[in-house]
Amino acid sequence: MAEEPIISVQDVVKEFDDKRVLDGINLDVQAGETMVIMGGSGSGKSTLLRIMIGSIPATEGAVWLFGKNVCELDESGLNGVRKKFGILFQSGALFNSMTVAQNVALPLQEHTDLASEIIEIQVKIKLELVGLREHADKFPSQISGGMKKRAGLARALSLDPRVLFYDEPSAGLDPVTSAEIDQLIIDLTKKLHVTSVVVTHEMDSAFAIADRMAMLDKGRMLRVGTRESFEALMNKDDASAAGMGVDDRLIRQFLRGDPVGPITERKESTNYAEDLLGGPVEEHREKTPSVVTTRSSAVR
Image 1 (tube, rainbow, N blue to C red):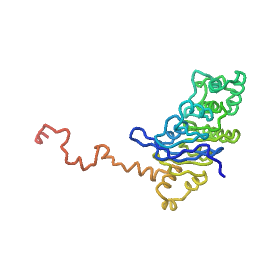
Image 2 (image 1 turned 135 degrees about the horizontal axis):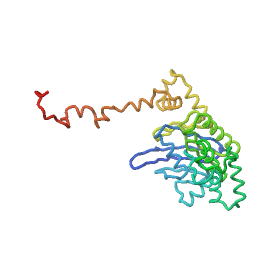
Image 3 (image 1 turned 90 degrees about the horizontal axis):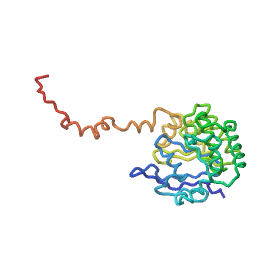
Image 4 (image 1 turned 45 degrees about the vertical axis):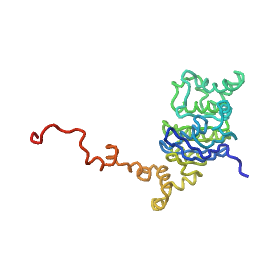
């Protein structure tokens, strides 16, 4: 029998006021794999991540993590689950008043009874994993953006998590540093046997690290599949792509970064004149102007 997924998102809906940003999302993540969640800005991928870690509640549905539905847990229950996973935030989210080593030590000091000597050893081990042991005594303001990401990752690893969540790990980094972060994710997944969930819209990184991929668009899950299946879709020629459904053509355009396709067609479908006038153009053609001249035509 197939193993139970370590994470299972079931029929998740999220609404803010009257706006639905996630619409019946289903996604299973198996232990030991790297799942990449992709989508453009406003697709709902960051909202889905926040629901998966219990940061915000789902409007409907369930998220099972380590056999518990995080949507039904109180704060005490959530804290117990959170000790089993780590998060690399988009900005690194380091405390500027603490050194790199102190940032990494903080979860160990707050959530364990380890002696300070043991914590110091653990911090050195985690910093060595991300290549920052020699920078332990520096403050965040003294290190580069890529080093901040690695320091944040070392902190995420401090409690030896079973799952690592990454929020846009390559955002704001140059290509070389981005590739280094990608390789670090791959190495850590293999060495530590952790499950990784990566939210990104950087396609180079996505294809470098993913075992499987999931594509979101405007709150809908369009496709979940292997990296190879997404590569095959991306590499279809124009003639083959013309016969595909709208969703597959949308995914293909996103993966390739093409300037023309369903995504751009959707953006262009809104009438500019209607947007300016606040309604159909015809409604405004017979209306009296809002400003009427007081001069007679003879004065012109």
